Length: 549
RNA sequence: GGCCCCUUCGUCUAGUGGUUAGGACACCGGCCUUUCACGCCGGUAACACGGGUUCGAUCCCCGUAGGGGUCACCA
Image (cartoon, rainbow, N blue to C red; front, top):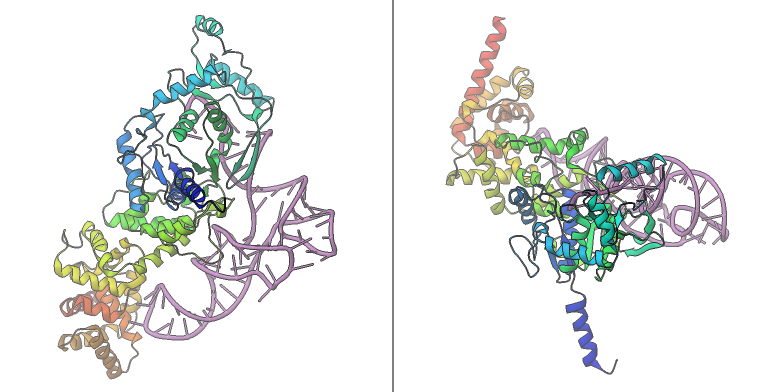
């Protein structure tokens, strides 16, 4: 072979382009929500396929409910688009194996069921639901594994006719082996060995002729030429029966890789979107939720408990997370490259991802770490990109015109620059609403007001004096203001801290914010002076009121 | 309950038959500072337990405990 380069080349070519083309898939049900655990599974699939030039396929598992499917599908597709997880074949993009909706593929499944029936690998079962339930209950009562008696199994047309004469209808069940073991290698779990006998005779076709998940799944995976089935570990116990089906139908088996589920914050239970009320007891989860809820509230977004949920990706999009941050966080949830690398670009993920390094145990969702990634990514986004994103929130909160006006944009840019990493997600721009509200509508933080204005005896006097200086100065840039105010402090023989807190409350109403000189400069002389006047009036009124009592 | 899976700081994880068990987030302390953040410096903190095997086990084997998944005419 060594002296026969042509063949060697051919082999390389052949194995890369034909044998090794990786095709993976993600198969959501159109429920309307994209679960964060599901996204991670999809991401792993996507990475695995794309890193070697393969294809990632989106298939819609809607064998059960066909109603209102289009509406329920959109949020899922939008979520993937937002995250930059694109699909080579599937809804809206089509592909060579259309259709990609299971509801439209029934004939294929029925043909497969028929083939299994003909080979004696499946049978018509005429048991009623009640009879089946009774057998199951008996097994449970005896604390034994349920093994169907096959009393109502029909393997010949004569038997079938006899049951039908009794008015019975049939489902098609797999005739599972009852001896030996099903053995297969899982890329993550390792060697798996399960007794065939522990596999029930699972139904693959309903009485109404429609087919069930396991059959549809196997048929589609083969039809779509899926090479790697990467899915949640909850499917591990489904694998033997799917192998049984695939072998019965003469398919090549895909590579299986069962990844552990994403667990709840602070527990090892599977993360579930329904348990949000419970998760809200977790202080980190609550904080994440609350910061989102605050933003949603300010932009007038209706908080639908069904969708506004940190377990769903929708949530992050709505409050201004960066998709790259979410993806980076998720890729490290159950996978790592080495002992230190944490920041991954899409390219480096593609370069380094491998199933071999997927962790075997479940990983808890950690809102704090997600937030940390988000903060880091946000910092790297250039001002030019941040500005329009932030503007959207101001518009939605009616703090600026829609669309935002030109001079407002330049103010916004200054705010974003001055705020720096205080804006961790785009929606945080709403924390700086004080720049946009009318002077007489400014809300004052009561605690700060009391502490900085009311309690210090000379606060009013100092602010009054400062107002005179600020009114008179020709320059109003941050650097000039710093010199001016420091000079003012020297004149008054006070420390800068003695005036600046009172000043901040007076002009922003808040206890904290970014640099004071920046704040003044952005606000501009007119607003600053005006707000000080209003604040001093408020102080006077309150003192007069207090004296009267 | 049957079957299957998992177990390293609070969390995500790295790691090896001999390491001061590494990193990140969080937390605590300090510095910086007009507040809040950031940043910088430092710190606390883990191999579930019990038996083996071995000169030596976090690492290999067995068991125990704990946690979890799954047992549909759902997907």
